[in-house]
Image (cartoon, rainbow, N blue to C red):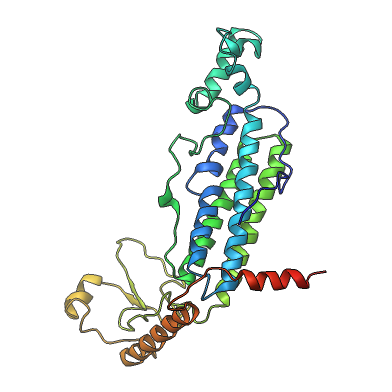
Length: 320
């Protein structure tokens, strides 16, 4: 159940209209890394967590709802940045309604030029934010990533929060309005907060690597192929132990020679690892059963109900 409180989580303010920046800020409204995308992503992800991971369901719904609040902050900011454009355009009797808000033809043409960096601001939805990115591309559900594997979804969320953080950081370069910058700072900070919350939630799921239930083959898991010619770089991504499996990286200097020698890697023997194919098969069976039982045990076969209202009523009655 949702209800709308008309107080913004953060008091959005604008010192003066700025249609050009309003267009850029649409990225945070209806862009691929915007607030609507985040809200919908966490909202959809939460459904598969409801029974097996009720604590993560609670977290995802809380953050999804906060993201809707952030969408309102961004929309309110865009609305204020557009200033009096919407009101002036509503004066259908006046032949040149923008003329009354600007002093002279040159000034009027300047505001038209600014607004026409996004025609929606003057034509489709005058003086109002549209659910698009800064280039007018409509918001799309394909922005949302949800695969019902919590360890994968949480990593996707961490990446999304990182992209959104950088987006706000870059937006700050394009406005010198101190009030707008305060809003951007708040929104940017919350992206980092959510990143840490998703990271902490991921750590409560063990094991969480590799994602899913099936393990990886030790024959291929620690191979680094030198697929480029010229000066080669070495680092912890191709030498020393791997970050999660702690296997020794095997640097394949000549990939073509290696695949021919091993019949397309099928005859290659594991090196630099203690894992064996048989151990991985046993782990596959064990984790598959555990993951399946986890979901099945949390979902009854019949008479299913999403909520227990009587239990909620008991809790309410206990409250002073």
